[in-house]
Image 1 (cartoon, rainbow, N blue to C red):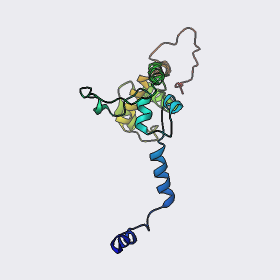
Image 2: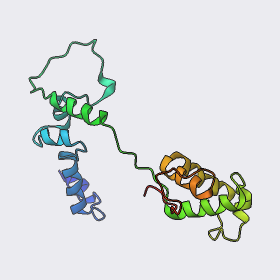
Image 3: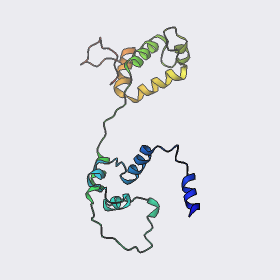
Image 4: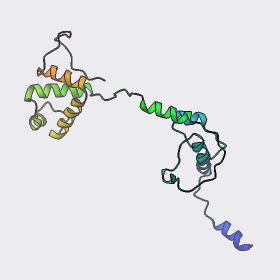
Length: 177
């Protein structure tokens, strides 16, 4: 009897924050569900495994061994969750890539002054106030190349590409910010 009591007394509880422990227990009971579709059908009274299996999903991909016959529990199938997740994944996403206006102005000035592939000259230019290295300048240019709108605006600003007929000649260099 006394051993159990002493063990309990010697247990270190001085550094345990009770509020943090409660938060940990709450997170275990009710995990955060990132998917809107899963959150809609989530039941906090059920375990994570039962919730996910009830949605028609698989919790652990390593348990996909169908050679063993399994006793099926009666779970309500919710196949709409899988369909909703697939539909969301197949929707086209908006391209969020952009180049900052300051980078565009800097590149336009440097390319018109030094030429296209003179990264080392651009890095030694006195107007390179942030003292960018040749690789950093090239990286900004490569990023600009990946955004077609920004790249076309840069080429027009440098005079390497003609201005289309519908646009004015006094066009300001802008990225798709």
